[in-house]
Image 1: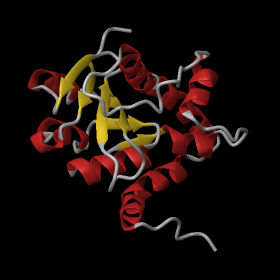
Image 2 (image 1 turned 180 degrees about the horizontal axis):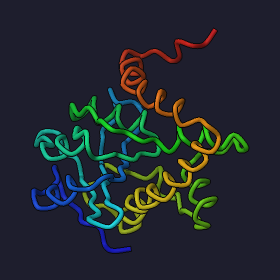
Image 3 (image 1 turned 30 degrees about the vertical axis):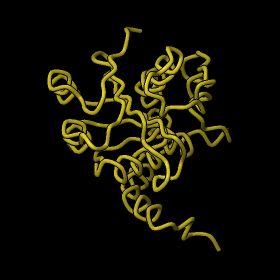
Image 4 (image 1 turned 135 degrees about the vertical axis):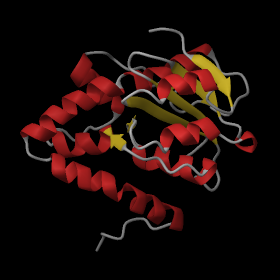
Length: 205
């Protein structure tokens, strides 16, 4: 694994020009908590499978013009593990409406009905044999200077997303669930609106 680039604020132009040419990028976010009204979006990690790997320390006052252009580009697929939460924070905190989304958590829940465990760690173990170290998951992402172990953790998550997507797609196609997956992905913007308005689940009895 090559060393990721660490920047503040936005994607530099030269790296943006590389990423926007990619068919897909892996994306992950780190926050101070899971309430977008209260908790700060601290990091956005972006990686191409065979290209740049970057970690952005979010500075909301500076804007994120290139990040917005990349995430709203309809030709580049954005692979998340928990797209519902990450796209919610990107929208609420940076006014970014992510398009062309793939969510490995949704895909796993539809495809891997033989398991009740759909965390990224479980997917990495099953499809690659690696053990993902999640010790930094709940660390202080708002600190000005990140620890080396935080940087390694942050970028490792996104690097596995490409292989996981391919394996999950094989199962979705084999079990004839790809159409249902696409319908759920199309529902994500509506789910985000429900989350912003504070609805838990409109489908509960």
